[in-house]
Each structure stands twice: as structure tokens, then as C-alpha cells.
Image 1 (spheres, one colour):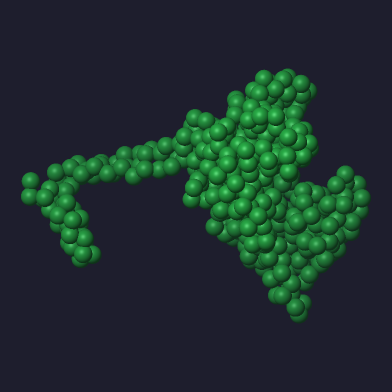
Image 2 (cartoon, helix red, strand yellow):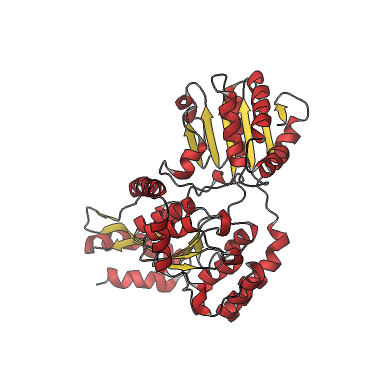
Length: 430
């Protein structure tokens, strides 16, 4: 891995390049995606079937072929091993327990004059989940998207997943059955986003779309935002690691590679105040690469987007990491809690040597759908909040309208909105 030293001449330029790691050239695919969305909006299922034949290399016989039979999902659930079924249930229960703690509540407050103010929290009617499919399907992504929607109280969940060469992933179907989801469709890419955003003869229009995907999916989500709500526009996976001399180089190397094996575009960045540790980790990464099934992918990621930065102290290390604002942040130091207060920007924070990032991907409970590319500076992880909407509650008492009415009427008059003013004053003249 490339090693940079923060006191070297030219470091600022190299660091600025690292900060661009999450750039996705959406402009290059926008016209293509916009065309696909337009076809879905205008032609519905006919366009869907045409896109599936073009991109997934199989031809649906009719509209019914777009949907996966719930009986097939039940069979998939029964077909997996008991150990794997237990693991899915454990993940499900932990994810559910965590997200139940995040659930906001409706509230009402009465003022002294008898007026009422409050907030009503209501789930959306229908949520659309996009889950990558085929051989690379991730049942963990289904759980991370479906469970928060279920906890939020969403009545209907729609899942779209691609099936290249008509191949469907058994684990994904098993996870759908575990969550009680019955509306699952063999549609992927920008076409799936369009189908859920606009609705077709078979796929109902949803209120919010969540879930990971490639640049075409991300671009489609950006283009349909406003027609529906979305979770975020996420890019390639990434990990940042803060480490001191107490960290084990072989552990750090494998943690960095755990993200590199996702995608050639993934980023793995270690920042440490220990120059010797930096060299040892670099050596361990090279040794471990040859042991990976996805060596080619991981190697390209490490060579093109991996970095180790050596700083003067941990304060500088944290400062640089806050600028990176990584999707996943591991704090592999002797006293990780001491640094927590200084960490401002990260999608998920993993504290201590026994907490590798994959624990968060699968089983810990917090959501693994996280902001990438520095967007952790203003985005939060997927949660129940993405499947809820909030309505303000206001009810004026006689004392309340008497107390606030004159000020309200004056503000309305000042803005030149005389009907607003009159609407208040006729109540003051009761």
C-alpha cells in the first residue's frame, strides 16, 4: 500500500486526491438512465420486459413472470442449512432490537393557555427496497432495509432484485420469507428504480426507495427523488482506520482488505501516528492479498484507492479522518473511547481491537446502509426515520388565539398577505 507522511512536501495535494475517492461520474450515465426511466414511465411492463431481456439476458414470458412466487421463497427458506437459518434469525432479531430503540414517538404538549402543540409520526404506506441480485446477492442488505421498514410500521414492502440469466439467489429469497415479504420482483438496475418510483401494471408505486446499487441505480435514485423519497445516493464501499502502536498489523491488514474485496472502486485508508506500524501493515496487506478468493478485485482497490497516512500524533490523525468522513471507521487504539469525542464525521464507528467492520455488516444490529464518499458529514445511516413522516399538530385555544393573534396578524400584514391577516383577525373579533 502507498504510505504518505503528513509532514512531507506535497502531502496536501495527495490528501486532496484521496478526498475525491467517492466521486462517481454520474454525468456520464445520466442521459442513459433518464432514457430508461422515461421508457418505464411511458410503457410500464412492456419496457420492463424489454430491459430485462437486454440487461439480464432472459425474456419474461408475460407480466406474471416478473414476480417471484412467495411459495418459492418459502422453499428457499426451508432449503438452507439449519445453521444458516439460525444465523439469519440472529441477525434479524439483533437488527430489529436496535432499530426499535431508534423509533421516534408522537407527542402532544399543552401550553398554559390551553393551546396544543405536538407531532404525529406516521409510517409511509409503501416502501420499495432495491437489493442487488444474482450470484452477488446480499441477504444481509435485505434484512438491513426490510427490518427498519417493518419496525416503522410500513404496511407494504416491495422488493426489486435483478436475476441475471434468470438466476435467483436462494439466500435472498430465504431472507425475504423470514421478513414476511411477498412482493418480490425480478427487476434490476435503473429499470427497477423507475418501476418503483412511477408504478407499472404489475409493480406498485412506492413512497420511498432504499437500498444499495451501482452507478446506474444511484443515478436513477437521484433522478426520481421528489417523485419519491430516497435514503441516500451512495457510492463504493470504504473503510477508514485510526490506529496506534497497540494495534496488530495483521488484523489491520485484513480489516482494510474486508472493504477492498467489495469492489475495485472501494477505498481503504489507515491513519496512524506509528511509522513502524504503517510499514508492517503494508507488508501484511501484500501477504494477505494472495489468500483472498477475490484477490484481483481487492488488489486493484488497494493499489488504486488504498492509502496509509503517518501523522505526527493521534490528534492530527483524527483531524484528517474527520475530513475523510468515512463510511466505516475503526478506532483501533489502546483507549478508543478517549478519541470518540473528537470524531465528528463517520457513518458507523467501530471501537476497539475486537470490533472489526464485518461485525457491523451482518450481526451487531446497527444498519450497514451508510453514507459514503464523505457524505457522512451530512447524511446518517439508514434507519426507521427513512420510512416515517412527521406531521406537526397545532390547536389554538381561546386564550391562545387571544395571546398570539395580534402578533401573527401584524407579521402577515407586514408581508403584504392581507388574507392571512384577515383570517386571524376575524377570530380575534369573535
